Image (cartoon, rainbow, N blue to C red; front, side):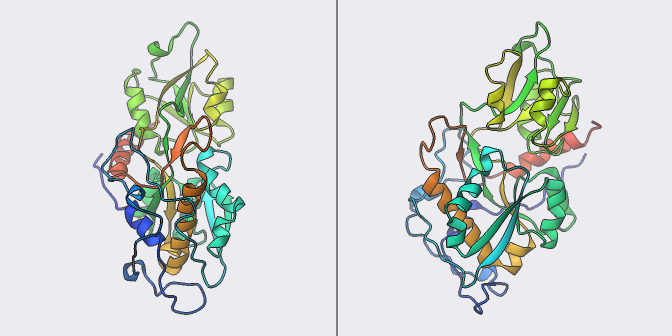
Length: 338
């Protein structure tokens, strides 16, 4: 299959710069349709020095994620409260924590935003984002997103979510057969449960894990399941393997009947905030305010050792080449029959 590359990414450094400043409003409505991103005055952000940016080409697993001082960027509330809806596939996974904390601590409210988190799977949320019926997605540049961009949807990935901790085992888990050891697992022909299916960003790291266990994206069967059903299906034999997120994998970590085969690349976020027409064009200032609140939440509540046993590190920057690597995996996975 021929590989096509579509522009989906907004460089995270530009996101941080724009999040620290605000355009002059054309009126007192809080709308910034006339204050397009290209016309914005970008200024240095107080409290965000050299540590607030890392080279996008740096894929080192030991890369220290960008951080500003706590409570920064400073709030710049909109003239009038703006209601925003963010779609997310689940509210139980830890990677959604920054949004939930921002709601709980009033960080969105400080920007003049009335934010609602709505649970919607990516395929359902995508057309709503493109039409402006929802404002953002806390998701990933899945194959469905790439296809949407190809079909003319105005969607951009504007901020990352997290990089896994080196000790994390979020990723591909298999239920061992009788007498089978982890090193002996052969994945060809097995059925795997995922939230998205073979168009998931997990196809990228999964491809590497499968290659070391006699499998491939074209040699396994996919079973798309709801977030609450993936672990259950693995435990009751509905699927042979599954992609388990934090903190779900901990429920099988100490069970010798299961084995971890591999996870997300260290130092490389594979998801985060996606904007559609509403925040890219109709309400640009609200989009900047949303990122400002998100980044401030990470700097304030998720800096350093915010918990004793980190599964991953919140990481708002997007790495160079991630979408190209994802599309290569989609070509391999989607280009074959399940």
